[in-house]
Length: 105
Image (cartoon, rainbow, N blue to C red; front, top):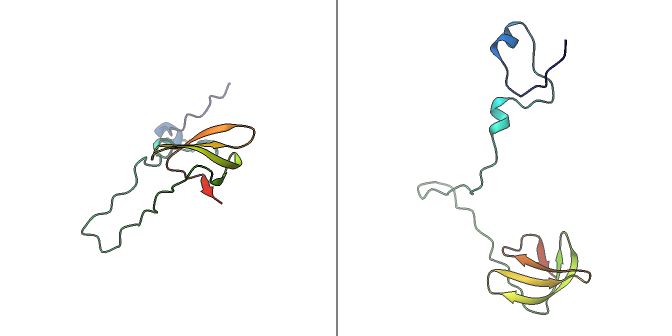
């Protein structure tokens, strides 16, 4: 008898006869849960302080920067609030704002 791949759904008949899903399957509910794309809202009536957003990073032409993926580079151009053009030596990249993976040296 050939075995069928587990789809992550537990059938009632399987549980009735004591069969459990494979160890690698996540199940029906956990398989559909994902991280929300929007940040959580702060309610004005909440007794807790609202999270403070860090100030946006600003770069100027000529600034030396480091990027998590591309390494050391120098800013060669700026699009106001949109992107920064950076020369990383072997490649020139347009890094979009917010510059989460890039920091000024």
